[in-house]
Length: 613
Image 1 (spheres, rainbow, N blue to C red):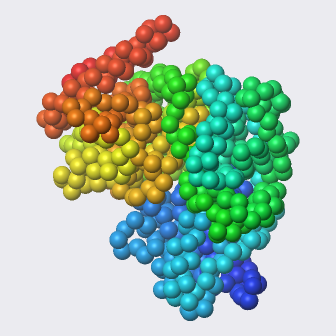
Image 2: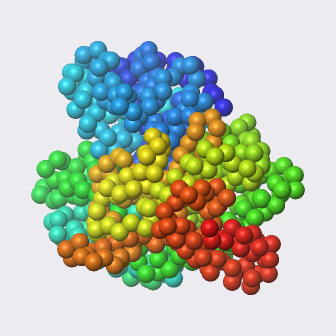
Image 3: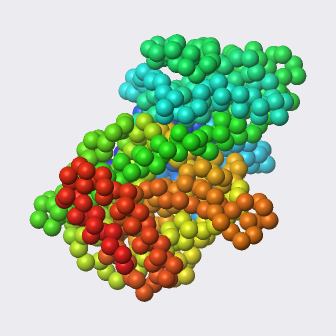
C-alpha cells in the first residue's frame, strides 16, 4: 500500500536547514539507513525509520533525502515491492545494476561542493561510512554525524516505544557449550591478536555467547545489549529489569560471573577503557561508526569478531538439534501441503494469509516450537514474482489450481532454526513453468552435491546453482545461500553464497549450515524457488585437494519437491538419482513418525510425493 510522504519529507527538509554541527550551518542531504544501533538486518518497530520516511518496508534499503530529491537504494529482491510502495516523491535506485551509481558516488556527483551530508552515526556501520566519506571528500563534500536522529524528531510521540521484553536462559541441553568455554576460546583469539578488550555489538553474537535468548525483535530471538570482553571481565550492557529470573543459577551453570551495566553506558565504558594508552581494542568493522569513533585509530583492531566465526560452526549438540528440528518441521510442512492440496481439490477457497496461518498452526503442535523465524512468504501467481513478498489484506490472492504457489517459511525451535521453500502447481503447469522449475532444481541438485576444497569462499560456488538457468539466458537476483543461526537469526553471517563479495567470509568449513536456494521469477506472473538447509560435511575425493580437505553438503530439510513440475528429459542420470535418493530419505525419516501418530492422510500424500521418477 502506497504512503503519501509529502508532509514528512517537507518536515525533514525543514529540520535539515536547522542542523548545526561544528562549523556547518545546515546539511544538504540526510541518509536514513535500515539499521538499528546494532546493525541488525531486521528491526523492531521503534527502529523502522527508513520505512517511516519512505513507505518502503522491505528489510534492505537506504534512503537519501536532499533539498530537492528523495531516493531509495535497494537490491533485486525488492525492486517490485519498492515500485509498488514508493510514492511519486521518490526515485528507486536499483542497487546491483551496472547502470546504478552507488549512494556515495551519486551524492558526490549531485551535491554542490562544500555540501554536508548527515547521518545518525549509531545507525551506520564503520564499513559503510568510510567509502561514502571518501567519495564525498573527493568532491569537497563532507559526511557528518548527527547524533539527534531527525526521523525520531518528526515521528515524535507516534514512534513505537523501544521493545523491552524479558530475556530467557538457554539450557546447556540445547546450547551444548558453557559460556566459560566460549570465553576461553575468545580469549585465545584475543591473545593471538594482542587485544586487551573485545567490543561486541551484534545482538546474535551476544545471545549466542551468553546462552540467552530474547524477543526484542520479531522472529529473531535476541535482546538489546552490548558486551565487552577482557581477559578478566565479562561486561554485559543490558537493562537489569530484563534479566531472567534464573540469571544467578545460569551464571553458576555456565561457570562465569557476568557484570551487568546499564545498556546506555556502553559509550562511557569504551571511553574509560581507551583512556589507558596503549590498549588495543578489537571491534568489528560492521559495528557502528559511533562506537568505532570512540576508539582512537592507533588503538583499534578492526576485524570480524571471533564470536562471529565460532558461532557459525555448530557444536555437536547444536548439530543434533538442527537435524531433529528439521525433521519435526518437515512433518508440519507435509501436513500443510497435503491439507492444502486436498482443500483445493474439493473447491475450498484458501488465500495466502489463511494458508500461512494454517501452516503456522501445524508447526505450533511440534515439540520445542517457539515461533516463526520470519514472516511466511505465502505467494500465489504474480505475487510469487516479488522475491520477499508478504501477504497483506490488500494484496492477498487466493491459492488456486491455475497458479504456481511459492511458500517460503521457517520456524524457531529451542534446538534449531528452519528455513525452507517449496513451489507447487496444484493444476496443470505450462511447459515454460516446468522448464524453469526443472532448471532451478538442476541448479539446486548440482550445488547440493558438489565437492569443494575446505575454506573455499562461498562466492566461488554460486555459479553452480545458476548455470542451468544461464544456459538459456535466465537468472535470479538474490543470493544462492546464507548462513543460519541455531535458535537465532535465520540469516547469519559471516558466510554466504552469492554473486556479491562477502568481505568477512572465512571460507566454508565443516559443520556450518547454509541455505541452498536458487530460483526464477517472471515479473507479474509467477515465482519459483526451491530451498533447503544443508550441513557442510567431509567428502571423499581421490586427491583430497592436496590434503587441504574435501567438503560437500548434506541436506537436512525434509519435505518433498514436486515431481509433477519436472521435465525428466532435462535431468541427467545423476540428477535423477539425486532427487530419487532425497525423496527416499524424506520418506525414511518422516513416514515412521506419521505412522506412529496415526496420520494416514499425510502419510498417503507423502508416499505419492516421494515416488521415484
